[in-house]
Image 1: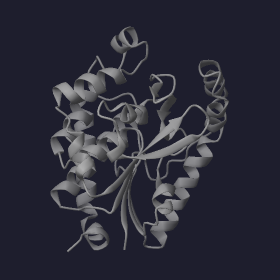
Image 2: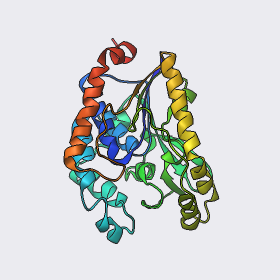
Image 3: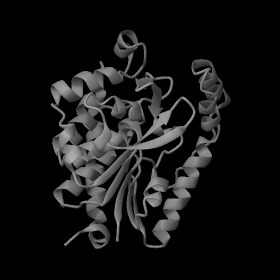
Image 4: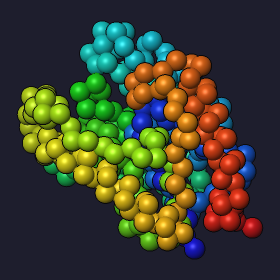
Length: 284
């Protein structure tokens, strides 16, 4: 049975994902394939490195660095989130991030990126991420608040514009059992984007008409992905993890204390589902 790990994005809420992945490392759980979107793409690479220090520090400490989110990056990078600071300083300089270790992992792993030139969200393998991690940066760069990443003549943004939970790509790759880690509550239903968000997309990205259109159906894509996951759970082909408690952390808001609580919650929720996870994914 081919197994897969499927990670939603979520910004700061990704601290939950990081805690879940730390549990997987501690328990020696591996997969045939893995997929990450947005923040989930970075945490996927940390998991592939089998480095809990990466997971913990990035999701609870560095994420609240004032040079990463807020006024400072707005002044320095002209965007609310300082993705350049993250990928040119925090990861390579402070954390000595070893992406090559992730590339050497035998797991077939992919991250989603959105091509502003019209092709929408596509997936690239972790082993094909460039040394400067521009493609990984692109996978995390949210519209409006983040900078468009230019690479090899293309313009990219966060793949979560259309593929918030990459379950469809896992199915396309013929995986049979899926561990899905989400960052939103169990009964969360995404609502349509406000009209002004779609208008803003047209104004900020006038040459990318598809972007505004994709935002217009973003809620439909998300709810479809959740429906697929729930069907797989009912068929005993997936385990669906999500925060079991509400912690006051949003995509762009949270303090260190609550982020650490959310990280610990991810670890504890995995422990609570230990028997089911072992049964489906533990390789003897």
